[in-house]
Image 1 (cartoon, rainbow, N blue to C red):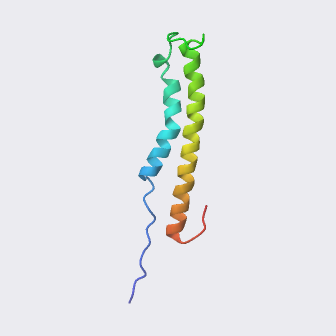
Image 2 (cartoon, rainbow, N blue to C red):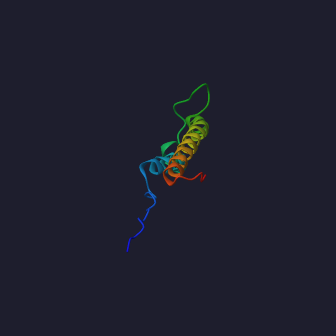
Length: 88
């Protein structure tokens, strides 16, 4: 009696998925930790630190979200390739 080999899916938590999670978590932590930016100095072109720090995080969040999305796409393609299917 022969047994068919069991295919086990890859681990759910992979290093790539950890990086994706950190990319998405970083902006939340940065904005929720108000004590780190609740000050007025240094002033950049007349804008207090409190404001330009938050504006800077809007741009950083955009880049981190884009990186997370691209990593997710790559991870999904790799998983679909290992399965032999075209799952997205």
